[in-house]
Structure formats: structure tokens, C-alpha cells
Image (cartoon, rainbow, N blue to C red; front, side, top):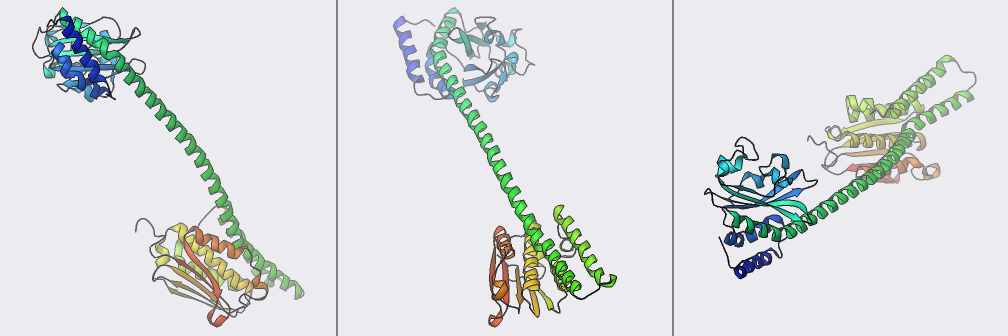
Length: 408
């Protein structure tokens, strides 16, 4: 189709005006498609843009929608216009692409030509600074529709579109570079935060081991030392008197191995929370050598055994320390441990000993450890005088529903 020079220039200006403000490839090609059709009739129009190092391309279409634009990134090697994109030819003009030996109906990249009957096809390169950045392609369903005049008009249009699409490609590449940089920084920050969290976890683990050593092993050793002191004051010592001490040392070493190996308390794991607390109560009173009346009242209905293992172990350690404090420091005549389940798991350890007066007023790290453990599992910890102001009561309460295993 021939145009008067003035009319052709006006249409080219119209194309450039339509491009203004388009911020992506697809909207840009669709914005100019109608005006391009006035110069270069088509049933299908697409712009193919080379990506990366030129080995891949992406197509943006108007008119008939084909598989070319659905594949976001395709290899140039498989493209039906590969020869144009790599600079082997300066245009491709076909009378009937469906009968042209240059196109293979079995090749995936060529298949849309045959699926949609795109017979008349015209392709010209889009160039910036002598570099091919893509191609402009027009197709008509009727064969033999394009000639030399259409080829000349296609080159003009490609020259108009090339700088704008080059700028869009540069913008997208810059955005991708920023995203890549942001992701790299995020990964770096993630590694830094990960290292920080690891350091915090290691420090927390160190503190946990320290608390375990204090609450269990150090308490056991303290009882054994006091027993040895009493034996030393009673004159000559026979094997029978040393046997409980030897047994206690072996038990202490076993506990230490468990802490080092980060094993769960075996009784807690095998027999449940109530039995583990009762076992510790019995053992602590027995090893102390005191005539202490103790009992466990379990009204928890198994609530502690349904908790997350980490939570139940923390509660067990708190109960251990509360019992150890009562046995070693309270000079109590009776000790009661209550396990409750209504409204949330609760442990109450009550003794009738010295309370907050005398030596017990000098609180050691045991109470701080109990508070820390309770805080880590979001449990409420209370230390107060016992009934009628006598002795001490320790209460640890877990909120109802908190700490339960995910399976529940």
C-alpha cells in the first residue's frame, strides 16, 4: 500500500505518540497495533526481544495470540526467524509460510505458523547502535500479501519501535539487577541474622546446660558431700555406710552423661510426667537422709504428657529445682507436689519449712533458673509463703492450650 509522504509521516508520528507512557512491552505493542495496521495490514503482529546474552528471546503479540507469547523465554536456536535474529539475513519475506521449506510443522518453535495458518509473513530486525535487539513480525492469513513496499514500511516502523523497546529492555534489566542485588543483600542479611540466631541459640543452650548442671548434678553432689561430712563425723566408716554414697555417685555420673548427650530424662520419656516427678521426689528425699514426709497429688489427667516435649522437660526441670530447694534448704517436715490439669497444666510445690527467713532468704541461681525456664515457655511463675504464712509455695502455671503438641 502506497502513501503520500505527508500522510506516511503523520502516521509515524501517531505511532510515536502512542508509545509515550507505555511502561511494558506488551502494552506498547498493543497500543500501536491499530495504527501500524493502517500502514502494514496484519492479522498477527509481534515484537520479539532478545534477552540476556542473545541466546533467548521473548515475544509480545497483538491480534492472533499464539504459543510464542505464552512461552516467556525461548531459545533463539529454535526460533523460525533464527537467521534474522543472529544477523545471517536482513529480512524474511514469505509468500506462504505453511508451504515454505524453511519452516517445519513438527518443530515446537515453528508450530504456531501452521496451527493458525499464518501464510504471508514479513520479518525485519530492530536495531540500536548497529546491534540487533529483536525483530518486528507481521502475518496475514492470506498468502502472497506482502511485497517490497511493505518491507520498506516495516523497516521504518521497526526503526521507530527499536529505541523505545531498547529502553524498556534496559529498564527491565536494571530492575532485575536491583532485584538480584536486593535478594543477595537479603541472603547476606539472612546469613548474618542466622549466625546471630545461632550464637543466641548456642548461648541459650550453654545457659540451659548450666541450669541442668545446677538443678540436677550439683544438687546431687551437694547431697553426697553432706552425707560424707556426716559420715566423717561419726567415726570409722565401713563399706555398708559408703555403699549409698557410691550408689549416689554412680547415679550422679549417669545424670551428667545424660546432660552432656542432651538426652531427655528417661523416666519422663518412658513413664510420663507424674512418675518422673514422683521418682525425683523419692530419690531426693532418700538421698538427703532426712525424715521428710512427702507425697505427690496428681490431678492432671495426663495433661503434662500431652505437651510438647520441650515444654514438658522445662516444667520437669522447674519441678526438680523446687523440690531440691525444699529438700536441701527448707528444713521442712513435709513436702507436697500437686499436678493439676484444669484450666491449663499447673505444678504446685509446697513445704512447711523455714520460708523466706534465715538462710533461705539468700536466694541463689536456682530460683532465677526456675523463673528463666518459666519465661521461656510463657508459663507463670509464683514464689510465695505457704498456707497460713508457713513455709514456701512455688506455683508454675501454663496457659490453657499452650505448649500442646501440633498433632493435637
